[in-house]
Length: 351
Image (cartoon, rainbow, N blue to C red; front, side, top):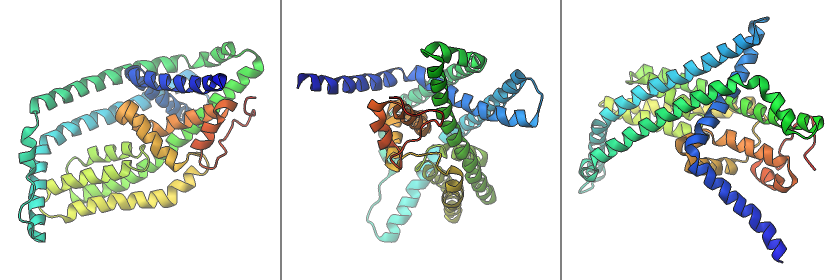
């Protein structure tokens, strides 16, 4: 009985310790995971560029692909940062506009009094909030700098990856098995990122047409934010449609522009999500919807908004790793959608 209890206690304690390390080392691990995801995107881009520029040196193709990914990432960060500054400046006007709308609704339905948002917000310590925002910006800049550093060294060390795998394994067969497993995990993550990127461009592009048509301010900012939120399954597009609609209420005296912005984004998400996304996704993302929601909550709790962005790739990684070991295969089965997590085609699960 004591032996059985020890067998149960050991994995529980190990799991708790692992979760604790993920939380307390998030400042180091989050930039590393982001850099790995960017490196996966670079690998996909390298193959595309290599097909278009046959005969080009491999190092030049990798450098060019890395430069494109970094320029796109930094450009998006710059535009989003500028948009957040404008949004913060407009926040008092937005709150006043929302209070006005509440009063109009209250009068329409016959309420004697309506809540005053500005009065409730007087108790907020503005200097403290400003200090928290400044600290968050400083932390974000540090994360970006560390991510870029990781990314550069990951690209520089790509040619030694196979040698490291060979030294980690005990035999050539084990090295090939390990390489196949890592390649399979990277392929699944790459497919997921590709599908989310293409469908995100479709949703954000259609939404941009609607926002520019109604004349919404900072439409480029909202387009990029919506594109990034498409990487958060299930809830990302909903958030990305509500917030620009609220700022449309601030900008325009009437309601129809906000309704058109919200409805246009939701319609684009409905069409893409029901007719295009399933065809592109096929069987590549074999994750249960409940597991997806749990992973959003779990990684969001550990790593904040970055964890929500990385929830599905991290869950795919965990599922494929657990699927290759008998003691952890039950977890992979629970995370999978059909109860049959995919294994690398070159080998069977480890005995």
